[in-house]
Every structure is written in C-alpha cells, then in structure tokens.
Length: 196
Image (cartoon, rainbow, N blue to C red; front, side):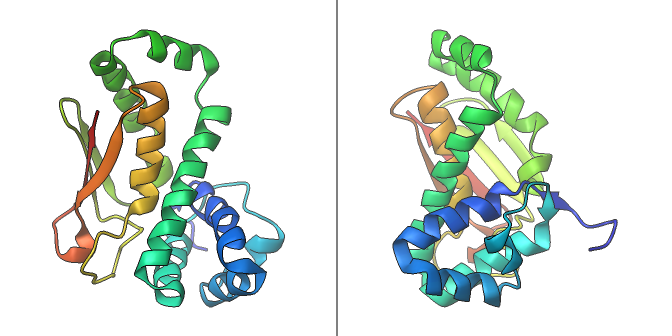
C-alpha cells in the first residue's frame, strides 16, 4: 500500500463480514472476500484504517457475487452494525445524552457537525458535505463505495444505513435515510436525504 493511499475506517470491511456470514454462510463469505483480495481480513479483521481501494473492491464484489438485491441487504445490515459500533465506541455517552435532550432540528445540527469533522474516516478521497434542514442532505462526491460502478439502482446502502442508525438513535426515532442520487447511476454525487 502506498503512503499516498486514502484511508477508510475498518468498519466498512469488518461489519460487512459480520453481516455476510449469517446470511450466506462461510463458503460464500470466503468467496466474496477472496475475489476482493481480502481473505486475510476474515482471519484477522483490520483494527486500523484501510486503503479505500480495498473497500471499493469489497463492495463491488458483493454486487458481482451476490447480485444487487442481496448485496444491498448485506450493505444495509453492515451499515446498521457500523452505526451501532459508533454509538457504543466512538460517540461519547455524555454527547449522546445531550443530543437526546435537544429538539430534533438542533440535535441534527450538532450531529452533522460531528459527522463533518469525522468525514475523513468514511469518505476516503471523496468530498463530503452536509446541510441541515428538513430534509437533512448529505452529499458524497467521488464515493469509494460505488466508484467505477454503473448501475440502475443506488449502490450506497452501507452509508445510508449508517446515517439512518445514527439519526434514528440520536435525533429522532422515525429518522430515515434515503439515497436520492447515486454516482453509479450517473449522478454527479451520491446524495442522501434524512427525514423524520
């Protein structure tokens, strides 16, 4: 891996493995990770940031091996698991308590500020922006998850589910995230709207 490699947090790999095994079994999980060149991560999950190219390959291979519908289901489950991991290990409990006491629009602004500050952990070399409002709009240009893909449906369920889980727990229990534009479908950027 070159020193200039852009990095993404290991959740984009480890949570996929966790979601994949119960749905398709060990053999298919090994097949997906093997074709992505990531077999070593099944034996020893990454504990540090990973090269974004590895994440791109894994998510491409999910779609190629499992088909788009099942890949979307796995990616969504992995995104929910990532949200749970962030809630358990990365977002301090006092901050979570504060967000729960705030009105939803204000909690959304505070959460968006934190997401913006930490976007480097999931956007890699992509460019992330966020706008508060109704709906909240999150945009990721040059998204590593769908880089190079050409599809007829959105491909970024992993990110949508992660955002949804965080907003559902910390902002409003009816928060839902929907990818309304996707680079894999020819859009200029992947765009997620969060409504409650």
